[in-house]
Each structure stands twice: as C-alpha cells, then as structure tokens.
Image (cartoon, rainbow, N blue to C red; front, side):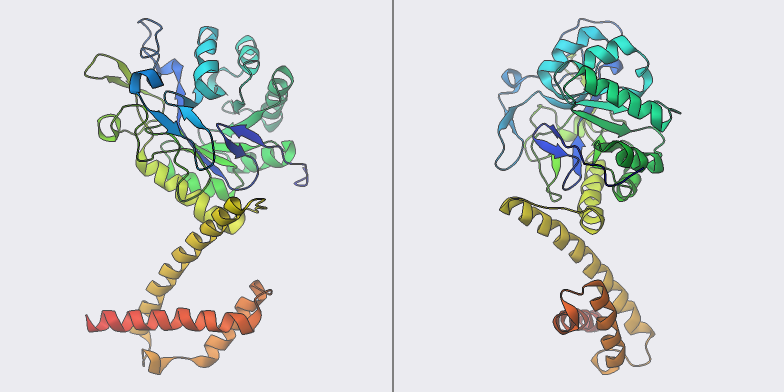
Length: 359
C-alpha cells in the first residue's frame, strides 16, 4: 500500500476533510433511533427545529457562508423514506455500519448528491470496506469519506487511508480517550454523535466543521439534553416533542485538543492563505504552550531533587548539550538561535520555582 497515493478532499458543510488540519465533526444522528411509532414529522424523527422554528442562523466559521439552523452535519437514514429529508437538511449522509449490505438503500443514499460517509461493518475486511466506498463513489458524485466506528481498529484506519487516498474519520462518541490516538493514526477527522448544540464553532483547533459555540442554534440547552451516547433517543421534552442527545461538551473538548495538539506535531499542512497559515501557527503555538507548561512542572520537581537548586544550581554544560540536541531536531534555527530561546525557558522555570518556594 502506497502512502504517496494522491489525496482526495471532500467538502462537508464548508470544511475540507482529507487535507490540512484534522476536523471535528460534532453532530451525527441516526434516524433509526427514533420511536417505532409516531408521525413522520421533523420533531418525531429526531431532527432539530428548522430556522423558522428557532429564529436563529448558525455560523459555519469566519469567511464562510451562513447555514440555516436545523441542519445536522451527518445523518444516518432508517429507510428510503428518510432520504428526501436527509437531502434537504443534512450536510452528509451516513451509510451505517449495521446495513452496509442493504444495497438498494446504499445505492439510494449514495445518489442523494451529498457527501457519503461509509462506516465499516463490524468484522468487515479492508477490501470490503474500500469496495463499498468505491461503489458509492460510482453511484454518486465521488464525494466519499470512510469512517471507522465501533471498536476502533486504528491500524485498519491508517491502511484504508493509505490504500484509497480517501479521507478517513473515526467516530469517537463515548470514547474521548481515543481521540488523540485516532489523530496520531492518521484520521482526517473525529466524529461525535448527537445533535449539534450550536453551529459554526471553529474553535481552538481551527478545523472544526461544527461544534458547541456560544449560540444554541437548535433551541436546546446544554444541561437539559446533555448525556453520553451520541445518537440515542433522549426521550420526550416538556412539550412532548421527541429529542436527541446533544454532543457531549467534554467529548468535544477532548476532540478539539486532539486535532490541535496531536495534529500540530504529526499532521503535515500546506496552508495557501493568510488565515489558514495563522490557524496553523495557532495550533503549533497551542502545542508549544502545553509542552512549556509540562516542562515548567518537571523543572519544579528537579529543583526539589538537586543538592543545590535555583539559579546557583544551574548546570551550564548540560544546558549547552540540550541546545545541541535540539538543534538536530530544528536545524533551520540552529544552536545560535535556539540558545536564547532555551535560556528564556529555563529562567522562566527557575523564577516560577522560586516564587512557589517563597509562597
């Protein structure tokens, strides 16, 4: 499998998936989770209210078009009867892992004109997964994203990305601890189940397709519908309307941290515009700040272990050796430019240790 295969990029709700920073897709619902009985209206089917119901408009991000409230990033249909509503109100259609062998429904979903997210059926081989993605691309417009879900096989995720050239995302709903590992394995995005509590947050990571922002575009408060479970029914609200859970804020924070910190270290980027370049720098700076905070904590421990601490106990030979080792990792900067940077970092840690000792 060649990793030099040309990368394909799919635009989902204004976000580019497959190149540049990994994205957080905060909002995936399954219409299979709705009550078995009841009218097929928007509320009964688990959809958020339309813009006319809320009087609000969600913002996708700086410099992007406004998108109406009531849309959901990813929707899995229950049957062919759901497809017109999915086409009208979703950014992408999900081929659910449980029905990848329902070829008539797969074909109908693939021809909606939306980006198609193909989940891997449990125990499905790489060849079967990629074959279904190719089928969807042929039936539809070619905009296909692969999604690893369930018990994540991150090795298979990476292999699928390298073998197909298609974007691959990981559904980490209920498993925020896997977010960083998924990005490290090469995931182009992280999917979080549930209704988006707000639309248009591009967040610290700079690559969110949707997320929890300051405006609740769907009219649901975070507390009254908050839960862990992604696309399961949350029950009936006070008005008797069927509701779905919203994206878990803690899971969203973990996903954003993963695409920001791990992505900054491991994911190559070639920004083409000034805003893109600044966002990429912001991600690197966020990772740098996290490492500096950790280094300061470790430096404080060192001061308690050395026989002579503080500025009097500085080991200048060790510091010169440290700068030389760093220069091998940062040859463009070299020792001459790195030396004052590391001196400032070391002295900041020493000042902090002294302040804490006096406190």
